Image 1 (cartoon, rainbow, N blue to C red):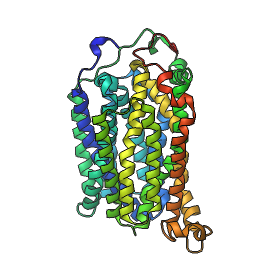
Image 2: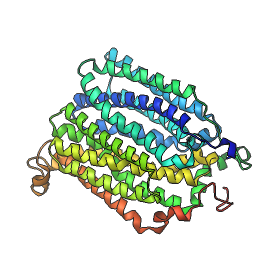
Image 3: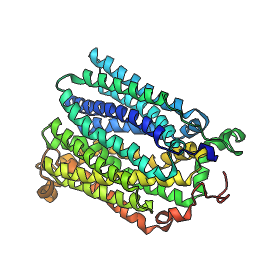
Image 4: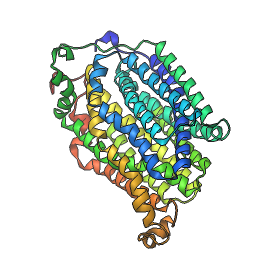
Length: 446
Protein backbone atom coordinates (compact mmCIF):
# COMPACT_ATOMS: atom_id res chain seq x y z
CA UNK A 1 0.00 0.00 0.00
CA UNK A 2 1.57 3.32 -1.06
CA UNK A 3 2.45 5.73 1.75
CA UNK A 4 -0.13 8.32 0.62
CA UNK A 5 -2.94 5.87 1.27
CA UNK A 6 -1.93 5.21 4.86
CA UNK A 7 -4.73 6.35 7.22
CA UNK A 8 -3.65 8.98 9.72
CA UNK A 9 -6.69 9.13 12.01
CA UNK A 10 -9.73 7.17 13.17
CA UNK A 11 -12.26 9.67 11.78
CA UNK A 12 -13.66 7.51 8.97
CA UNK A 13 -13.69 4.43 11.17
CA UNK A 14 -15.56 6.26 13.95
CA UNK A 15 -18.26 7.52 11.57
CA UNK A 16 -18.88 4.04 10.18
CA UNK A 17 -18.68 2.53 13.64
CA UNK A 18 -21.39 4.86 14.99
CA UNK A 19 -23.81 3.78 12.27
CA UNK A 20 -23.01 0.10 12.77
CA UNK A 21 -23.55 0.56 16.51
CA UNK A 22 -27.11 1.74 15.85
CA UNK A 23 -27.74 -1.05 13.34
CA UNK A 24 -26.48 -3.78 15.65
CA UNK A 25 -28.61 -2.39 18.49
CA UNK A 26 -31.71 -2.68 16.33
CA UNK A 27 -30.74 -6.15 15.11
CA UNK A 28 -30.10 -7.42 18.64
CA UNK A 29 -33.49 -6.10 19.77
CA UNK A 30 -35.10 -8.00 16.91
CA UNK A 31 -33.10 -11.15 17.64
CA UNK A 32 -34.11 -11.07 21.30
CA UNK A 33 -37.78 -10.50 20.48
CA UNK A 34 -37.75 -13.28 17.89
CA UNK A 35 -36.09 -15.65 20.38
CA UNK A 36 -38.89 -15.01 22.90
CA UNK A 37 -41.53 -15.40 20.18
CA UNK A 38 -40.03 -18.70 18.97
CA UNK A 39 -39.76 -20.06 22.53
CA UNK A 40 -43.39 -19.13 23.19
CA UNK A 41 -44.44 -20.97 20.03
CA UNK A 42 -42.44 -24.19 20.59
CA UNK A 43 -40.96 -24.44 24.11
CA UNK A 44 -38.02 -26.47 22.72
CA UNK A 45 -34.29 -25.87 22.34
CA UNK A 46 -34.06 -27.25 18.80
CA UNK A 47 -35.87 -24.37 16.98
CA UNK A 48 -33.71 -21.83 18.81
CA UNK A 49 -30.51 -23.67 17.92
CA UNK A 50 -31.68 -23.93 14.30
CA UNK A 51 -32.01 -20.13 14.18
CA UNK A 52 -28.28 -19.99 14.89
CA UNK A 53 -27.66 -22.80 12.40
CA UNK A 54 -29.39 -20.99 9.54
CA UNK A 55 -27.59 -17.77 10.41
CA UNK A 56 -24.07 -19.21 10.43
CA UNK A 57 -24.18 -21.92 7.74
CA UNK A 58 -24.75 -19.52 4.79
CA UNK A 59 -21.75 -17.52 5.99
CA UNK A 60 -19.54 -20.58 5.72
CA UNK A 61 -20.87 -21.36 2.24
CA UNK A 62 -20.32 -17.72 1.23
CA UNK A 63 -16.72 -17.87 2.41
CA UNK A 64 -15.89 -20.06 -0.59
CA UNK A 65 -16.49 -17.14 -2.99
CA UNK A 66 -16.94 -13.97 -0.91
CA UNK A 67 -13.23 -13.16 -0.74
CA UNK A 68 -13.02 -12.89 -4.51
CA UNK A 69 -16.05 -10.59 -4.56
CA UNK A 70 -14.59 -8.34 -1.84
CA UNK A 71 -11.16 -8.09 -3.48
CA UNK A 72 -12.64 -7.38 -6.92
CA UNK A 73 -15.65 -5.29 -5.93
CA UNK A 74 -16.29 -1.97 -4.28
CA UNK A 75 -16.15 -2.57 -0.53
CA UNK A 76 -18.29 0.44 0.31
CA UNK A 77 -21.09 -0.79 -1.98
CA UNK A 78 -20.89 -4.27 -0.46
CA UNK A 79 -21.33 -2.84 3.03
CA UNK A 80 -24.39 -0.89 1.85
CA UNK A 81 -25.80 -4.03 0.21
CA UNK A 82 -25.46 -5.99 3.45
CA UNK A 83 -27.45 -3.42 5.42
CA UNK A 84 -30.05 -3.16 2.65
CA UNK A 85 -30.75 -6.91 2.58
CA UNK A 86 -30.96 -7.00 6.38
CA UNK A 87 -33.55 -4.21 6.22
CA UNK A 88 -35.57 -6.05 3.56
CA UNK A 89 -35.54 -9.20 5.70
CA UNK A 90 -36.93 -7.26 8.63
CA UNK A 91 -39.67 -5.85 6.40
CA UNK A 92 -40.56 -9.40 5.27
CA UNK A 93 -40.86 -10.61 8.89
CA UNK A 94 -42.97 -7.57 9.78
CA UNK A 95 -45.40 -8.11 6.89
CA UNK A 96 -45.76 -11.82 7.66
CA UNK A 97 -46.40 -11.09 11.33
CA UNK A 98 -48.98 -8.39 10.59
CA UNK A 99 -50.84 -10.78 8.27
CA UNK A 100 -50.73 -13.57 10.91
CA UNK A 101 -48.72 -15.82 8.60
CA UNK A 102 -45.35 -15.77 10.40
CA UNK A 103 -44.02 -19.27 11.08
CA UNK A 104 -40.72 -20.60 12.44
CA UNK A 105 -39.51 -21.65 8.99
CA UNK A 106 -39.89 -18.08 7.76
CA UNK A 107 -37.33 -17.06 10.36
CA UNK A 108 -34.95 -19.72 9.09
CA UNK A 109 -35.16 -18.24 5.58
CA UNK A 110 -34.69 -14.62 6.66
CA UNK A 111 -31.83 -15.44 9.03
CA UNK A 112 -30.15 -17.37 6.22
CA UNK A 113 -30.37 -14.32 3.95
CA UNK A 114 -29.06 -12.08 6.70
CA UNK A 115 -26.24 -14.52 7.37
CA UNK A 116 -25.18 -14.58 3.71
CA UNK A 117 -25.23 -10.86 3.00
CA UNK A 118 -24.17 -9.96 6.51
CA UNK A 119 -21.02 -12.00 5.96
CA UNK A 120 -20.24 -10.14 2.74
CA UNK A 121 -20.71 -6.87 4.59
CA UNK A 122 -18.55 -7.92 7.54
CA UNK A 123 -15.81 -9.23 5.26
CA UNK A 124 -15.78 -5.98 3.27
CA UNK A 125 -15.63 -4.02 6.53
CA UNK A 126 -12.89 -6.24 7.97
CA UNK A 127 -10.81 -6.08 4.79
CA UNK A 128 -11.17 -2.27 4.77
CA UNK A 129 -9.76 -1.83 8.27
CA UNK A 130 -6.19 -1.38 7.06
CA UNK A 131 -7.41 1.38 4.73
CA UNK A 132 -9.25 3.38 7.42
CA UNK A 133 -7.38 2.56 10.65
CA UNK A 134 -3.72 3.41 11.46
CA UNK A 135 -1.67 0.29 12.21
CA UNK A 136 -1.03 1.22 15.84
CA UNK A 137 -4.79 1.26 16.45
CA UNK A 138 -5.64 -2.19 15.01
CA UNK A 139 -6.32 -3.84 18.38
CA UNK A 140 -8.13 -0.76 19.68
CA UNK A 141 -10.37 -0.44 16.60
CA UNK A 142 -11.13 -4.15 16.54
CA UNK A 143 -12.11 -4.05 20.20
CA UNK A 144 -14.45 -1.14 19.47
CA UNK A 145 -16.05 -2.63 16.35
CA UNK A 146 -16.35 -6.16 17.69
CA UNK A 147 -17.04 -5.67 21.38
CA UNK A 148 -17.97 -2.11 22.30
CA UNK A 149 -20.57 -2.35 19.52
CA UNK A 150 -21.93 -5.80 20.30
CA UNK A 151 -21.53 -5.60 24.07
CA UNK A 152 -23.18 -2.20 24.15
CA UNK A 153 -26.07 -3.69 22.22
CA UNK A 154 -26.14 -6.63 24.61
CA UNK A 155 -26.62 -4.20 27.49
CA UNK A 156 -29.32 -2.05 25.94
CA UNK A 157 -31.08 -4.32 23.43
CA UNK A 158 -32.33 -7.09 25.77
CA UNK A 159 -33.57 -4.57 28.34
CA UNK A 160 -35.38 -2.51 25.70
CA UNK A 161 -36.70 -5.50 23.77
CA UNK A 162 -37.84 -7.23 26.96
CA UNK A 163 -39.96 -4.20 27.84
CA UNK A 164 -41.05 -3.23 24.33
CA UNK A 165 -42.01 -6.80 23.37
CA UNK A 166 -44.80 -6.70 25.95
CA UNK A 167 -45.84 -3.09 25.22
CA UNK A 168 -45.51 -2.33 21.51
CA UNK A 169 -45.09 -5.97 20.51
CA UNK A 170 -42.93 -7.59 17.87
CA UNK A 171 -44.27 -5.06 15.34
CA UNK A 172 -42.82 -2.10 17.23
CA UNK A 173 -39.46 -3.79 17.76
CA UNK A 174 -39.18 -4.54 14.04
CA UNK A 175 -40.08 -0.92 13.18
CA UNK A 176 -37.27 0.37 15.40
CA UNK A 177 -34.89 -2.07 13.72
CA UNK A 178 -35.75 -0.61 10.31
CA UNK A 179 -34.90 2.91 11.49
CA UNK A 180 -31.47 1.78 12.65
CA UNK A 181 -30.73 0.26 9.23
CA UNK A 182 -31.37 3.68 7.65
CA UNK A 183 -28.88 5.23 10.08
CA UNK A 184 -26.23 2.62 9.26
CA UNK A 185 -26.53 3.12 5.50
CA UNK A 186 -26.45 6.91 5.90
CA UNK A 187 -23.12 6.88 7.76
CA UNK A 188 -21.51 4.67 5.12
CA UNK A 189 -22.75 6.93 2.32
CA UNK A 190 -21.17 10.04 3.87
CA UNK A 191 -17.57 8.72 4.05
CA UNK A 192 -14.92 7.63 1.58
CA UNK A 193 -13.58 4.08 1.91
CA UNK A 194 -10.38 3.73 -0.15
CA UNK A 195 -9.85 0.67 -2.31
CA UNK A 196 -6.44 -1.04 -1.87
CA UNK A 197 -3.93 -0.70 -4.69
CA UNK A 198 -3.65 -3.92 -6.66
CA UNK A 199 -0.14 -5.13 -7.21
CA UNK A 200 1.40 -6.72 -10.28
CA UNK A 201 0.17 -10.14 -9.16
CA UNK A 202 -3.42 -8.92 -8.84
CA UNK A 203 -6.38 -11.13 -9.59
CA UNK A 204 -6.63 -9.70 -13.10
CA UNK A 205 -3.57 -11.81 -14.06
CA UNK A 206 -4.84 -15.04 -12.52
CA UNK A 207 -7.06 -17.81 -13.83
CA UNK A 208 -10.47 -18.29 -12.25
CA UNK A 209 -9.21 -21.36 -10.36
CA UNK A 210 -6.22 -19.43 -9.05
CA UNK A 211 -8.52 -16.66 -7.86
CA UNK A 212 -10.80 -19.04 -5.96
CA UNK A 213 -7.95 -21.02 -4.37
CA UNK A 214 -5.67 -18.07 -3.63
CA UNK A 215 -6.57 -17.78 0.03
CA UNK A 216 -6.06 -21.48 0.72
CA UNK A 217 -2.69 -21.56 -1.06
CA UNK A 218 -1.64 -18.42 0.82
CA UNK A 219 -2.40 -20.10 4.14
CA UNK A 220 -0.72 -23.38 3.22
CA UNK A 221 2.51 -21.44 2.67
CA UNK A 222 2.24 -20.04 6.20
CA UNK A 223 1.77 -22.98 8.62
CA UNK A 224 1.62 -20.77 11.70
CA UNK A 225 -1.38 -18.89 10.34
CA UNK A 226 -2.90 -22.26 9.52
CA UNK A 227 -2.26 -23.31 13.13
CA UNK A 228 -4.50 -20.45 14.31
CA UNK A 229 -7.26 -21.80 12.09
CA UNK A 230 -6.88 -25.34 13.41
CA UNK A 231 -7.22 -23.88 16.88
CA UNK A 232 -10.44 -22.11 15.84
CA UNK A 233 -11.66 -25.22 14.06
CA UNK A 234 -11.54 -27.12 17.36
CA UNK A 235 -12.84 -24.35 19.58
CA UNK A 236 -15.77 -23.36 17.36
CA UNK A 237 -17.17 -26.89 17.42
CA UNK A 238 -17.67 -26.80 21.20
CA UNK A 239 -18.35 -23.08 21.53
CA UNK A 240 -21.26 -23.04 19.09
CA UNK A 241 -23.03 -25.68 21.18
CA UNK A 242 -23.04 -23.38 24.20
CA UNK A 243 -23.91 -20.39 22.00
CA UNK A 244 -27.02 -22.09 20.64
CA UNK A 245 -28.03 -23.59 23.99
CA UNK A 246 -27.66 -20.55 26.27
CA UNK A 247 -31.03 -18.78 25.74
CA UNK A 248 -33.10 -21.97 25.95
CA UNK A 249 -31.23 -23.11 29.08
CA UNK A 250 -31.85 -19.83 30.93
CA UNK A 251 -35.50 -19.63 29.87
CA UNK A 252 -36.09 -23.23 30.99
CA UNK A 253 -34.38 -22.74 34.36
CA UNK A 254 -36.16 -19.43 35.03
CA UNK A 255 -39.71 -20.63 34.27
CA UNK A 256 -39.73 -18.86 30.89
CA UNK A 257 -38.93 -15.46 32.39
CA UNK A 258 -37.78 -13.23 29.53
CA UNK A 259 -36.68 -10.59 32.03
CA UNK A 260 -34.12 -12.96 33.51
CA UNK A 261 -32.72 -13.74 30.06
CA UNK A 262 -32.55 -10.02 29.30
CA UNK A 263 -30.75 -9.37 32.58
CA UNK A 264 -28.15 -12.06 31.96
CA UNK A 265 -27.59 -10.86 28.40
CA UNK A 266 -27.17 -7.32 29.71
CA UNK A 267 -24.63 -8.51 32.30
CA UNK A 268 -22.62 -10.14 29.52
CA UNK A 269 -22.82 -6.88 27.60
CA UNK A 270 -21.66 -4.82 30.57
CA UNK A 271 -18.69 -7.15 30.97
CA UNK A 272 -17.92 -6.87 27.27
CA UNK A 273 -18.02 -3.08 27.44
CA UNK A 274 -15.69 -3.05 30.45
CA UNK A 275 -13.30 -5.47 28.77
CA UNK A 276 -13.40 -3.67 25.43
CA UNK A 277 -12.88 -0.22 26.94
CA UNK A 278 -9.98 -1.54 29.00
CA UNK A 279 -8.50 -3.12 25.88
CA UNK A 280 -9.10 0.03 23.83
CA UNK A 281 -7.27 2.18 26.40
CA UNK A 282 -4.51 -0.37 27.02
CA UNK A 283 -4.05 -1.36 23.39
CA UNK A 284 -3.52 -5.05 24.18
CA UNK A 285 -0.54 -7.20 25.02
CA UNK A 286 2.55 -6.92 22.83
CA UNK A 287 2.23 -10.67 22.30
CA UNK A 288 -1.30 -10.84 20.98
CA UNK A 289 -1.35 -14.63 21.06
CA UNK A 290 -1.79 -14.41 24.85
CA UNK A 291 -5.02 -12.48 24.34
CA UNK A 292 -6.27 -15.20 21.99
CA UNK A 293 -5.37 -18.27 24.07
CA UNK A 294 -5.85 -16.96 27.61
CA UNK A 295 -8.97 -15.05 26.59
CA UNK A 296 -10.47 -18.26 25.22
CA UNK A 297 -9.69 -20.21 28.38
CA UNK A 298 -10.93 -17.56 30.81
CA UNK A 299 -14.12 -16.87 28.86
CA UNK A 300 -14.94 -20.59 28.73
CA UNK A 301 -14.29 -21.01 32.44
CA UNK A 302 -16.60 -18.09 33.21
CA UNK A 303 -19.32 -19.63 31.04
CA UNK A 304 -18.94 -22.88 32.95
CA UNK A 305 -20.13 -21.04 36.05
CA UNK A 306 -23.29 -20.04 34.15
CA UNK A 307 -23.98 -23.72 33.56
CA UNK A 308 -23.24 -24.63 37.17
CA UNK A 309 -25.39 -21.82 38.60
CA UNK A 310 -29.06 -22.17 39.38
CA UNK A 311 -30.09 -18.59 40.19
CA UNK A 312 -30.05 -15.39 38.12
CA UNK A 313 -27.42 -13.69 40.30
CA UNK A 314 -24.84 -16.41 39.60
CA UNK A 315 -25.63 -16.26 35.88
CA UNK A 316 -25.21 -12.49 35.89
CA UNK A 317 -21.86 -12.57 37.70
CA UNK A 318 -20.50 -15.34 35.49
CA UNK A 319 -21.86 -13.65 32.37
CA UNK A 320 -20.14 -10.42 33.34
CA UNK A 321 -16.86 -12.32 33.73
CA UNK A 322 -17.25 -14.01 30.34
CA UNK A 323 -17.95 -10.61 28.79
CA UNK A 324 -14.85 -9.02 30.33
CA UNK A 325 -12.47 -11.63 28.90
CA UNK A 326 -14.14 -12.08 25.51
CA UNK A 327 -12.87 -8.91 23.76
CA UNK A 328 -9.27 -10.10 24.07
CA UNK A 329 -10.02 -13.12 21.88
CA UNK A 330 -11.20 -11.66 18.58
CA UNK A 331 -9.30 -8.39 19.00
CA UNK A 332 -5.98 -10.18 19.42
CA UNK A 333 -6.79 -12.63 16.65
CA UNK A 334 -7.80 -9.91 14.20
CA UNK A 335 -4.78 -7.76 15.06
CA UNK A 336 -2.49 -10.67 14.18
CA UNK A 337 -4.16 -11.20 10.81
CA UNK A 338 -4.27 -7.50 9.92
CA UNK A 339 -0.56 -7.24 10.64
CA UNK A 340 0.48 -10.36 8.72
CA UNK A 341 -1.71 -10.31 5.57
CA UNK A 342 -1.24 -7.77 2.77
CA UNK A 343 -4.26 -5.40 2.39
CA UNK A 344 -4.86 -6.13 -1.31
CA UNK A 345 -5.44 -9.85 -0.67
CA UNK A 346 -7.18 -9.69 2.71
CA UNK A 347 -10.63 -10.29 1.20
CA UNK A 348 -9.66 -13.69 -0.24
CA UNK A 349 -7.42 -14.69 2.65
CA UNK A 350 -9.93 -13.66 5.31
CA UNK A 351 -12.72 -15.51 3.49
CA UNK A 352 -10.61 -18.68 3.35
CA UNK A 353 -9.73 -18.12 6.99
CA UNK A 354 -13.40 -17.94 7.91
CA UNK A 355 -14.31 -21.02 5.87
CA UNK A 356 -11.64 -23.18 7.50
CA UNK A 357 -12.17 -21.87 11.03
CA UNK A 358 -15.96 -22.08 10.95
CA UNK A 359 -16.53 -25.28 9.03
CA UNK A 360 -17.30 -27.20 12.23
CA UNK A 361 -19.74 -24.56 13.51
CA UNK A 362 -22.83 -25.89 11.65
CA UNK A 363 -22.24 -29.28 13.25
CA UNK A 364 -22.14 -27.74 16.72
CA UNK A 365 -25.25 -25.67 16.04
CA UNK A 366 -27.10 -28.63 14.50
CA UNK A 367 -26.44 -31.02 17.39
CA UNK A 368 -26.97 -28.55 20.27
CA UNK A 369 -30.78 -28.58 20.25
CA UNK A 370 -31.38 -32.30 19.57
CA UNK A 371 -28.79 -33.29 22.19
CA UNK A 372 -30.62 -31.11 24.72
CA UNK A 373 -34.18 -32.20 23.83
CA UNK A 374 -33.56 -35.91 23.30
CA UNK A 375 -30.46 -36.80 25.34
CA UNK A 376 -29.48 -34.50 28.20
CA UNK A 377 -32.91 -33.23 29.26
CA UNK A 378 -34.45 -36.74 29.53
CA UNK A 379 -31.29 -37.99 31.25
CA UNK A 380 -31.62 -35.30 33.94
CA UNK A 381 -35.35 -35.73 34.54
CA UNK A 382 -36.54 -37.16 37.86
CA UNK A 383 -36.06 -40.74 36.66
CA UNK A 384 -33.24 -40.01 34.20
CA UNK A 385 -30.11 -42.13 34.10
CA UNK A 386 -27.81 -39.16 34.91
CA UNK A 387 -29.94 -37.49 37.57
CA UNK A 388 -28.52 -39.60 40.40
CA UNK A 389 -24.97 -38.67 39.36
CA UNK A 390 -25.26 -34.97 38.54
CA UNK A 391 -28.56 -34.03 40.18
CA UNK A 392 -26.82 -32.67 43.26
CA UNK A 393 -24.87 -30.21 41.13
CA UNK A 394 -27.34 -29.22 38.40
CA UNK A 395 -30.67 -30.09 39.96
CA UNK A 396 -33.40 -32.14 38.33
CA UNK A 397 -36.08 -31.18 35.86
CA UNK A 398 -36.47 -28.51 33.19
CA UNK A 399 -33.16 -27.01 32.12
CA UNK A 400 -30.95 -29.29 34.24
CA UNK A 401 -29.91 -31.42 31.27
CA UNK A 402 -29.11 -28.36 29.19
CA UNK A 403 -27.03 -26.98 32.07
CA UNK A 404 -24.98 -30.21 32.21
CA UNK A 405 -24.49 -30.18 28.44
CA UNK A 406 -23.55 -26.49 28.46
CA UNK A 407 -20.97 -26.97 31.23
CA UNK A 408 -19.33 -29.96 29.53
CA UNK A 409 -18.81 -28.10 26.27
CA UNK A 410 -17.55 -24.96 28.02
CA UNK A 411 -15.00 -27.06 29.90
CA UNK A 412 -13.78 -28.47 26.59
CA UNK A 413 -13.39 -24.90 25.31
CA UNK A 414 -11.18 -23.99 28.28
CA UNK A 415 -8.98 -27.03 27.63
CA UNK A 416 -8.57 -26.04 23.98
CA UNK A 417 -7.54 -22.50 24.95
CA UNK A 418 -4.85 -23.63 27.39
CA UNK A 419 -3.79 -26.49 25.13
CA UNK A 420 -2.82 -24.01 22.41
CA UNK A 421 0.36 -23.19 24.33
CA UNK A 422 1.62 -26.72 23.69
CA UNK A 423 2.08 -26.02 19.96
CA UNK A 424 5.06 -23.76 19.04
CA UNK A 425 3.74 -22.97 15.56
CA UNK A 426 0.67 -21.42 17.20
CA UNK A 427 2.31 -20.02 20.32
CA UNK A 428 5.09 -18.26 18.35
CA UNK A 429 3.09 -17.18 15.28
CA UNK A 430 3.98 -13.51 15.74
CA UNK A 431 7.72 -14.16 15.47
CA UNK A 432 7.49 -16.87 12.80
CA UNK A 433 5.36 -14.87 10.33
CA UNK A 434 6.69 -11.37 9.49
CA UNK A 435 4.39 -8.34 9.28
CA UNK A 436 3.23 -7.63 5.74
CA UNK A 437 4.83 -4.17 5.70
CA UNK A 438 8.20 -5.65 6.71
CA UNK A 439 8.07 -8.69 4.46
CA UNK A 440 10.60 -8.58 1.61
CA UNK A 441 9.45 -11.40 -0.58
CA UNK A 442 9.50 -13.98 2.22
CA UNK A 443 6.88 -16.61 1.59
CA UNK A 444 6.29 -15.12 -1.88
CA UNK A 445 3.01 -14.68 -3.64
CA UNK A 446 0.69 -17.52 -4.50
